Image (cartoon, rainbow, N blue to C red):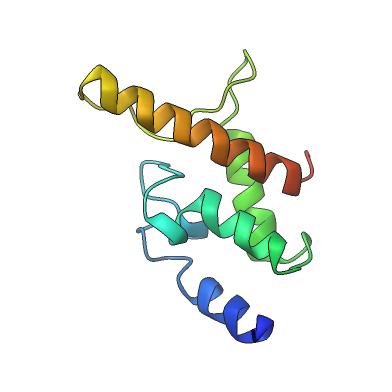
Length: 107
């Protein structure tokens, strides 16, 4: 495994969703599979990128900005979908957030 190459590949995709730090213009932090804000932040920390790196710092900042007053995180815009899809999406999101929060220091 070439960590330097892996880091470079992930960092080059930071604008793929239409906004900075792997997010979408409407601040969706989970769209885009491995190149979503949540996944990219998690993978970058697992690869050992220092949190002071501007890309990881920016992604972590977006994640913390998505925290609601009640402690939950708003990771995507609400869309009309079936309850099953919402439940699956929210459950998956909760697992992703838990992993990333452990990796991102709170500001």
